[in-house]
Every structure is written in structure tokens, then in C-alpha cells.
Image (cartoon, rainbow, N blue to C red; front, side, top):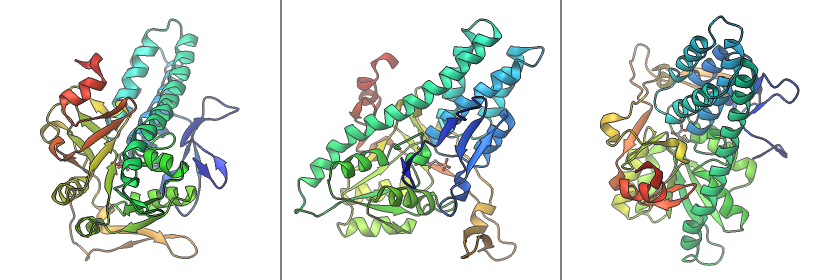
Length: 369
Ligand code: MRU
């Protein structure tokens, strides 16, 4: 994506020191654009756990690069395999819901195991990390092309110049991946093609990824948008102001149940009640083929209650954090919810669009039968 006129990914290897991972530290957006260097597995684990980087695809890509550091660190120990396995466990333990994390770590473990000799193992870890990141970019690009067809169809029923109104929740944008994003990819592609689009951006309490990240991203690309409070979507749908919903996912089961940021389920219910198509855009690295019933089986991360009791914002001279709850009030913070497949109109993947069902997904991914 273009940031301040320059093309950027969310994670990359230092151009001169290819053992240092560089990431955009998303905690500071939209107020400051800061690149952070990660030089150890522990720093990578902290960056994922404390959400310097976040979003399923980005977490997976950063974990892929983290495994390169794991191989470099393991090479300095007496037991390469033992140290590598310990680092893999450390990374996987950081966040439970986005399956891309475990997927990337397992892929690295398999690739490294197949290489012989320490130098080759490190070299394979480096190339696999780059492949994971490049595939993420290619998948998001393809999701954009497939999703474009849906937006084009909606645009065909509009008056000339009237925008297609798309509601999205949280940030399944460029910042949640390596580039382009999943939910935002069809929007960016339509925008590039000159189709008038307008995005309703759910602010996405408690961490405000919509208000802080999606709004910033769309602004950088020049895509028209308005931030709305999380509870406004149903009202806008009742008044015909939402043509479609596109969200991302952190883990989707083989039967099409979708885990995504808390509040997504309520948007899907409102969309169903109002006949608004509800699409989920995801690369296949987000599919968990071992799970069927999302509500029963997907682990939902519980985050610290201070994310609810406190809010951060720009004071005019810097960021400030203030308490918004009565002193002593307690809060509970489940970070994701599961939208059952029956509420999902379709899943947009890098291989095309399918019904949210086992048959639908297997038609696109027959190798998983
Ligand atoms: O907690 P986060 O910010 O890592 O949550 C991830 C998300 O932003 C959303 O759930 C998103 O819609 C899916 S991630 C591609």
C-alpha cells in the first residue's frame, strides 16, 4: 500500500541486515508512523502478543519471519531441534484465535526439518518466510479480483456516480496482512477500476482498529469512508444505506463458521434481517480444516480488561490514555466471536468465491477432502 507516497508492506527483512525483521508498529497509528526492528524470538513474541502487529495474515507472516530468528538462535545452542521447537511453542502461545500463526510456524518447522545442515536450515527458514509473505500478498490480490465481481454487480444497479456502500468491521485491511488486506482488497480493486465506493467503518471497540487503522488506511488510499459507532450498522441497513458487508476472519472452520473481531456476529444478524449480503474475505491460510463447529471449537482470546476501562487518543501534542469507567468497575473482554455459516452469503478466497459450507469450501480446495 502507499503510505505518504511510498509503497510499503507491513513486515519485511532489513535490506542490509537480513536477520533483523522490520514491522510497522501499529500501536502508534494513526498518530505516528513508526518502524520497529525485531531482533530476537522474544521480541517477535512480544510484538505479536502486545499487538505491535496484529491481524491474522500479518501475525502469520511475522511468525514466519520469527521462525527465521528461531533458526538463527537455535544454531547457537547445543540442541538445534530442541531450541527450535521451544521457540515455535513460544510464538504459537502468543495469540490463540488467528490460526495463521500456527499455520506459519508449522510450515516453517516442516521446511526446516527437510533441510540438512545448520546453514541450509537457516537459508530455508529465510526463503520460507519470504514465500509466506509473498503468498499472502498474492492471495490478497486474488481476493480483490474475485470480490470485484460482487461490487461490480452491485454498482450495475446504482444510478451513475452513486457509490456502492460497503460496511466493514475491525481492520482486515493492508495492516492486517502483508499488503492489500482481505476485506479491503475488493474495495481497493473496485476503487482502482473507477467504481464509486463508500465504506462504513465500524470503530470496533475496544481497541478501535476500525477507527484508528481502517480509517487511516482508506484515507491513505483516498477511498471515501465514514467511521460509525459499532451499534450504527443495523440502523443504516434498515434504511437501505448498506449494499454489502465484507469482513475478514481470524479462523474459519471447514464448515464455514467464521471467527472474527468481537461484534461481527451482530453485524451478520442485522445483515440477514435486512437482506444485506454478508461476505467474508480470507486467504486459505485462515481456514482451519481440523475444526467443524466454530462456536464450540474455536478458541476465543480474552484480552485485558484495561482495553475496555481505558482509551487512548491524541491530545493535540501527543497520545494520552484516560480511564472511561467508574473507578473500581470491572470489565470482561472477549476479543472475537463466531458467525455461523448460515449467516454468511459467501466466502471470498484466493481461488474464488464459494458458499460458506463444507461442500462450498471443498469445491475450491478439493485437496482437503
Ligand atoms: O485483534 P486483532 O486486531 O489481531 O484482530 C484481527 C482483526 O483485525 C479482525 O478480526 C479482522 O477482521 C480479521 S484479521 C484478517
